[in-house]
Image (cartoon, rainbow, N blue to C red; front, side, top):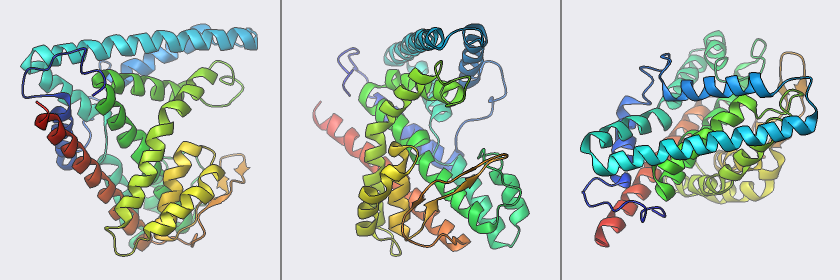
Length: 335
């Protein structure tokens, strides 16, 4: 861990051990959302603060340059807040045993590898049972696209796209920054990601105010996005129906065709591995965005293809844990 020199870990419970504990618990119990509706829930608190800054600083009567500057200052403030919070948690965890439990709880809140998996599994079961209405109801809470007239193929494609991109944003990127910088890295990552989700859209309101948040989000996803793509290629070797060679080729051919290159890498890896065509034209309430297809396979995705994607997703999650365990082993052989 690059910031290990800041804290001299004398005990047996290091951040990597805490991460391993959290990931294993997450497999069986899922992401901790028990208090997600409470005002003190960390993510809710951060979102409320961002909304307050947005209301106070991002007003229509201000010039584009003023909005850009105020957006930069807002980002700087929240980054400092994230650093302070991360340092506080890391220091407490290093000095007090009870704080280690608190850090594990925070990891279970901020990292997810099971909850979305279960949701996509419900969509697969609904499609398998010939119940597209239930599948639409479930996926409507996960996408901004118009789902009213979406057929089972469209639902399946969108579900796989959500599942694949979540591997980067909800699991591998948070884990990557936690491994490098401890809880400080995780805190900063989620600060930027949350700001991007709230003010990073390219609408008239946030074009200037959210520009910095959008740029930073692209930067923090760049390395995890590449690593995630090649982790999918590696996972494809362990799945009989997957093709790792096609997955690798697909990354180089289709990644830059997706609206987000960083997320396009893993989406291309999924499409190539399982011989699918993902993304494509997407319908919103008032518009249809003609986005290119990702992959050269079939766009008529069935519940069987969804099952294979869930299998691939689970394999990547398992490989991620194996890599963390390997890092733990290296850490303890050096001490």
